[in-house]
Amino acid sequence: MPIDLKKYILEVKDFPKPGVGFKDITPIVQDAEAFGFVVNEMAAWARVRTPDIIVGIESRGFLFGAALARELKLGMTIIRKKGKLPRETVSIEAPNEYAVEHFEMHRDAVKPGQRVLIVDDLIATGSSSSSAIKLVRKLEGNVVGFAAVVALGFLGGEANIGKACPDVDVLALVRY
Image (tube, rainbow, N blue to C red; front, side):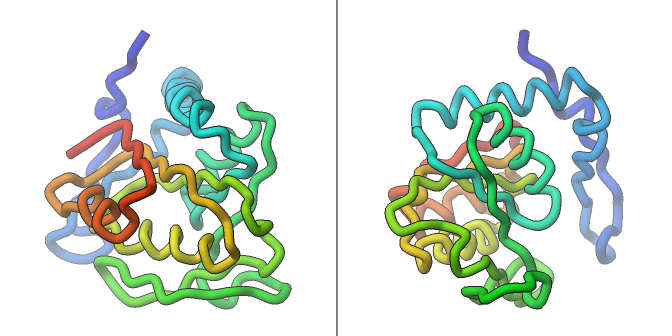
């Protein structure tokens, strides 16, 4: 039975800066039924794409990515912000709506040709999402999809991912 996930997403006004309405998805994770619904929906979508590994983006992408990997009986690896990983890394510039950051992965996180499904909590402008896809491709991974709980449609992120990475399917369970 479908769940209205918008009932679980709280808007925090003026965070992280004035004028921004931050979409807080933590109530979804706090509710077993809502969290299970998200994982089940992502899993159903992911199964037909037959990923070999899940990649979660720091930090809320880890929550959904880990649960999805467990559901699909797959391993998971991570994308972190620069300087957070202890071994040899590959990095890429990852601009977002607030700043220009850098994403990193361990050099051995994805094997060449491995089918990768990337997970995050939210798609805003699509810049970070596209950067994550490009980072996995630097490791010669085959990105078979990008899944998120929320897409802020008014920022055009899904369309921007489509322009930057037209061969990658995108899933967003909730759109604003």
